[in-house]
Length: 158
Image (spheres, rainbow, N blue to C red):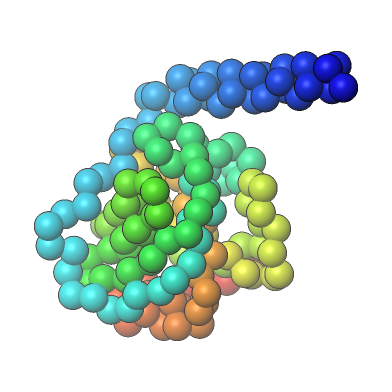
């Protein structure tokens, strides 16, 4: 029994060390923009989950710096100026439409596989880098409609 506990403790310590090393390697990523006082008129608000933010085009390269590493429940608001992801227990994430390059559907990202096109992948620029933020929205069709009325059309993944 002691051996199992020791091995479990060692694995946990290695996981923590790996997470800290990844965070240190990613400190050169710009911090996400602060939520502005005026986010624009509310177009729609949706329950869902923040899944991950990864390097652009690399869905297995999770970004853990600046509080982006943990998935969890979120309220996702589409406004006239951007997308506000208000994450439970974490700082809110603001995706201004000026930084959004594309919105499309995805089926998987790091540690999450869902039904076909069950995730929304938002490709945007964070500082001078392209990143992909993945959301799981409870009402995906309504979210798509809100994005379209805000001027961001969804593009299906080929």
